[in-house]
Image 1 (tube, rainbow, N blue to C red):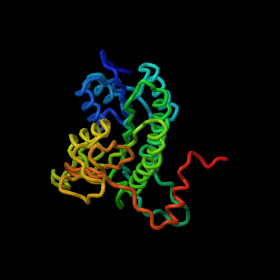
Image 2 (cartoon, rainbow, N blue to C red):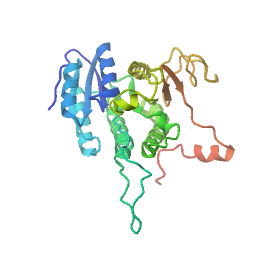
Image 3 (cartoon, rainbow, N blue to C red):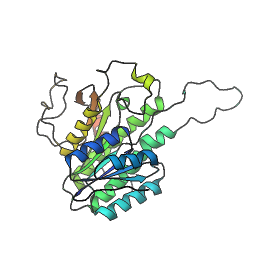
Image 4 (cartoon, helix red, strand yellow):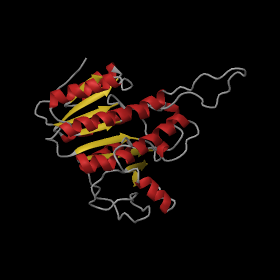
Length: 298
């Protein structure tokens, strides 16, 4: 079932995992700005329909992001309806709920690890990126095309309790950094990733929320503000790109610089731009810069 109500709007957004949590919060922030058709993709039909009814300009699409054909057909349907695409939030994600370190009976191989977290957090983001590229290219009326991926601080640091989640989020940051230059230079598409610390969403249970004081959590308003900043493309609070981490909680970008290819770490109410590690030597720089091409195919 799809629920809609977006008369008089003109910009088009697609948000995966849009029925709750950060996806819904970003939809609400865009709705408050006005001028947006908001397409919320999620597998949970009950929550999705409620979200569409509560957010002005929203339409819900029941979508299985693990099924490429399902995801692709929704993108096509949205583009056929809107004739444009301005913003994609590749946000669908879960945390793993099994113990990676469990012991298993000797004498036979263990069962395979549950890889649903890899499929949702990484493979679906790759597929969403693939589809966003295709429909952004067709959207010649759009002048500010944006793809924001939801990564995590788990993509920057080790995370012993959830190694599969950690690996998936490292993959998202690698995907963003790899495609961002080509997307921007060839198709004028800006790609960035947010890397939040702990956020009070339905990814965590209430018991986990009591682990830290409130000042440790990233407020949902900070998620909204950061994504809106990336859509707008500039960070007025940023210092010089050569600054170290500073009291304003911002580094790695110059004031007025157009934002693309950024991994934005969120801690409490602060944000930080986490740059790619420097090349270890000139040989590695030469090797990696040789990969700056479209394909290895002859």
